[in-house]
Image (cartoon, rainbow, N blue to C red; front, side, top):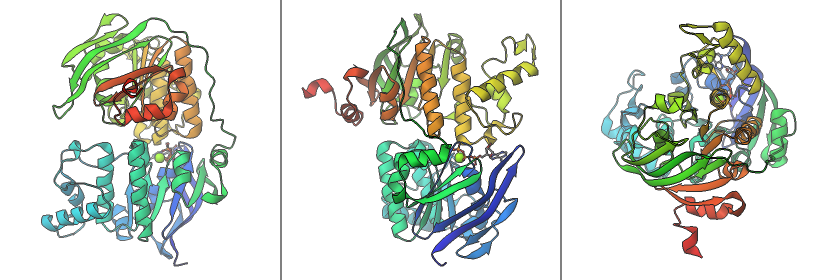
Length: 507
Ligand SMILES: Nc1ncnc2c1ncn2[C@@H]1O[C@H](COP(=O)(O)OP(=O)(O)OP(=O)(O)O)[C@@H](O)[C@H]1O
Ligand SMILES: [Mg+2]
């Protein structure tokens, strides 16, 4: 059994209202990439938090390298060679890479020599081709680079068993390929990886074995070579999943959003939008494709009043809303699903009910002038939960206790249900399981059919092609060619995203 590095036996974990892990048996072999797959709320993160010492099982045993082990806290996990990259990062923005790596070590009784540590970081960075400078501050890094810092942090602490909780959800397709190379190199060196992802193509690409969870229980463990994508989806959801959507004919109404020659700066004071132009009409989905970091986030912020433009105009439903306050803009009838659900979209420490009514707490029937009618608030929350199949064990508990995908579903449910004029969604299905992804795409199409103008900002070209009516490409703060879906070709859009100037130049 020297080959098995982790054995989980009959692990059970209960939270108020739910058994998140129900007698789970799981085994990780040395040098393997073992994927945990399951619907939103199936219990993946909980199980990994137990292995990382953040939670304690109510029942069951953990064996590390064949030896029964009690993991009391993350420091214990590190001592046992276990390191976890979390679904939501845990780095401190204002500190450097070096300081983040050192953080917490001192309390654990390590003697710190900054010079030695920084050399060590450089060495790890070079060995895996990560390109991370120990002295750069976290806020100066892209999300993909921040994830590399998390990897450095765990490797620095000597991790032999790496737990990666949806690492690819925040990566660009190119970054995913690079990180897969890194994972492969790690397992070649004898490390072992537990990988979590909802993207079946990735799972089929990187895994040696796959264990499927459903509602806290193990459905089965399979060899990658013995299963198909469809087979995995069926195991996970318990029914067949159709990867197909029907679309009604386009019925465009008037211009709901005009973005005219907009320039804006990012946090570093660099020009991130260099004269952006496009319109979105009622009744259409405008898909804005692009590799992260080309101005998408800044664009969504200037439209929603969360950032000022340097020049240019933003016109919503015929009214000039350039540099108006967020409050004024939202009153115009805008809904917004931001890229960062825990920083902008939801208030982590408030309950599911409070988050659900965030857009309505001052409107009848939830409010009568000064008081919130909690019966109505709860009724409304129940409706969102039911319609969007959100798994909420306890509505009064802080929303941060929901699983990652269920937070995203709540946010989407709240914003789409406002029945806005203009709906802006930034990678809406990030972190959603296959069933929920299909459901949300249907809801976006329904919104379009109801006359809503939908601006879909996403890096997922499959998603953009599946539901958009027109596609634009954002590159270095400009919108390159805009094409109707009938004329759009996926490989050409891909080239544009990579910076090939214009389709017209080519012909
Ligand atoms: N600390 C906690 N307190 C209460 N309930 C919790 C806590 N952590 C998780 N849960 C609940 O346990 C269930 C499983 O959550 P978990 O985060 O493990 O799901 P997941 O499989 O990782 O889902 P996702 O794919 O959406 O990330 C969910 O219903 C969640 O709300
Ligand atoms: Mg999770």
